[in-house]
Amino acid sequence: MTETRHTKVLIIGSGPAGYTAGVYASRAMLEPILVQGIEPGGQLTTTTEVENWPGDTEVQGPDLMIRMEAHARAMGCEIIGDIITSLDMQSRPFKAQSDSGTVYTADAVILATGARAKWLGLPSEEAFKGFGVSACATCDGFFYRGQEIVVVGGGNTAVEEALFLTNFASKVTLIHRRDELRSEKILQDRLFKNPKIEPLWFHELDEVVGTDMPKGVEGVRARNVKTGEITEIPCKGVFIAIGHAPANELVKDTLETHMGGYVVTKPDSTATSIPGIFAAGDLTDHKYRQAVTSAGMGCMAALEAERWLAEQDLDSGKDTTEPLGYGAPVDAAE
Ligand code: FAD
Ligand code: NAP
Image (cartoon, rainbow, N blue to C red; front, side, top):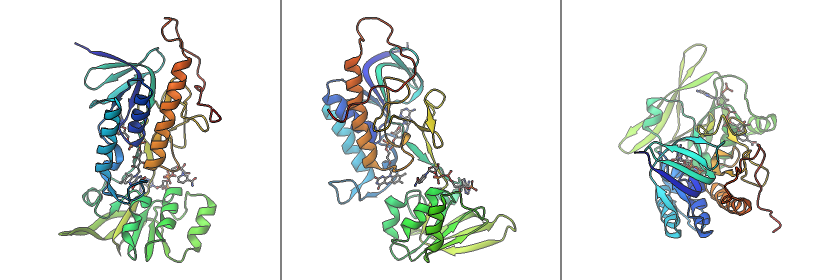
């Protein structure tokens, strides 16, 4: 039999944005339900040391997320291991169908489904993920001080990551499949002026090579896309920067998105184009994509959901469906 659970606030996602929203919504006595999704704890569970979470000089990503989950639970957030498979944002209350068969109905929804780095899909890339292969220079660049590094990609992310990595690396090779970068000209200027960066045009990553004991990267094989010729490049770190994909499957056909699928929110707000639906974290953020900024947006979303709910006349039985337009943000001046 299908179970239906109603909540004032449904939080979808269990990364820093979702758990922080859970803490704040619980303290607002909204008795939120948080659905964790396929990756409980989110992206930080896929990394080791996190060195930029304020208050912890160093913390293991999975440990940090266990603590965030415990914090949200302690405040009263109900946390459920389930996956939302579809979200009806036209009906009131909002209706979320889940993988377990439970239907969650909610007066307000906080979307915190994050983003996923795109990967090339090479078996050797998968084998060395977390052992020299990364998709986050801000997170992992520090570990390659004085080493040679390879970056793959030609967009803003790849160029910014290559530039950032010169703070640590002795040399950065930027492998790009064309001889023209997609990134902004100003970033290209900086890249071409940087003596530590050497572009390798018309090449694709063919294989990451390394050792098993200890597990680590020793270099890459890059293939010339025109001639098929292989160039071997020694390096200790490989950063894949071929784009990030927001996990927007639930809302991409309904909510306004931009910059490759990131959910649009009102400036200085987490309000989306549908009143009562708020979005926080990497799902909306094409720019910073950090744990601390995601947590900050989770806080904002819960505060804005609380304010929005207080303004609704939910018990009168009248249809509260509103035309598309931004929900009311918390007034920063108050
Ligand atoms: P995510 O962490 O992406 O979490 C998304 C959540 O949504 C997951 O729990 C997932 O299960 C859930 N979800 C998705 N779809 C559904 C669905 N349909 N139903 C229910 N739930 C769903 N940032 C830093 O600040 N410092 C670092 O050192 C750092 N290191 C990183 C290392 C790596 C390898 C990676 C990949 C990222 C790193 N980041 C780091 C970035 C940081 O992890 C992200 O910015 C942050 O996790 C984003 O938080 P979020 O809550 O928006 O989403
Ligand atoms: P992107 O702009 O989509 O660029 C991805 C790059 O990776 C492209 O150069 C692409 O090559 C390459 N690529 C994609 N798939 C590949 C594959 N399978 N093999 C080899 N190369 C592959 O992604 P992004 O750089 O992450 O940027 C995403 C969005 O965020 C953009 O809109 C960007 O402007 C924005 N952004 C902005 C800033 C900023 O404002 N400072 C910073 C970062 C990102 P091709 O060029 O040949 O297609």
